[in-house]
Image (cartoon, rainbow, N blue to C red; front, top):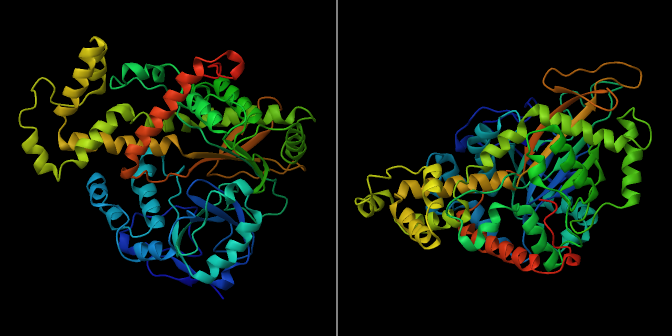
Length: 509
């Protein structure tokens, strides 16, 4: 049985995630039934979604993956179903927060919200060529129950304890399989194999906001990732500290990027995975580093896409990926979005409290008539310079005066930009590469893909870079973000007071 088409969208002839901007009511594609479950296999998952890759022969699905929402063990299926079938996902305050995007306010499912957020917020910031907003698909219960059997069978045990697939969700996102070049897959004989590396870049800069309190000043000197490692270590979530530094990855030069990649391969912690033809060949659990066996397996598998001799394939691959990332400039773009968090969570939480404490912007106007004419606009550079010249006591008073001076609209902007930056700080990045020539010397160029050369072998590759997991960060999580920030800082400060043999150092920062 073929998937049931829905009006108002592409089906078989859809491009790789590219689509025109549509009204919310047009966001309908197809419905998948029990018979359509064949061919969908577990690929992986993040904190909120499970990803299924297609291994069948349906033209509609080749080169695609399904992104299905996860449900907590404590969720009620009936609660989820009724919420998704009727009420908008966003709260009243969130609809005000994203009022420039009215379609988001109308979304009644998480999948629809993520599609709209990706297309209307993240694509303009990160580039449409790097962000696939996906297509909405409707899933019946039979389909979900059938694919869930495969998920349970393939899901790592540590993931299974975390959450299960939401079999009542009914709506999912069909997006491009970024581990392949869809427009040539299955159409050309002799095509070289595709290799993909998935990274979790994390926060790429140190905050400089004047709103950071004196007791938390360490945040200006040690990366968030390095500090968070100490909290995870104390909680038993990791067995050793990662050698990776996001500051290296976002350094803006190929040597820094290469250094970051080498560290990620030594201590993956689920922050790096490698796929060959869509099958994972390196990566794994969050709490372990790479073993000698895993390194040997990866070295062997890379022979399919590298002319480098044995023992030199992993270093060559790391150099190749570093070169591709440096040439693409996507890290620069991602960093610029992360920097939209100009006031740190310590400033953003104050703006959040003011934003949710006002009923609307009219009430804000009444509260801010007496604002000082000397600071009519919100300029982070001016705020930072002014507060840096003050004593600790004066700075705290300055912080209070600063937040009191914010209008409702300025508070909204601070919170909105913080949440957008949070998406950029927690996304995934995939670099997909394929040798330009096969073993017989036949070239397979692709006009839409860029070209990179391996510095160690001279071998040429076509490549593309894609962003994933660009989830909407919810307004109600702001207090949690603030609490987590304090936990991370406190854990690091406590750890830094312990002996060096406790693995509490800042060498990776």
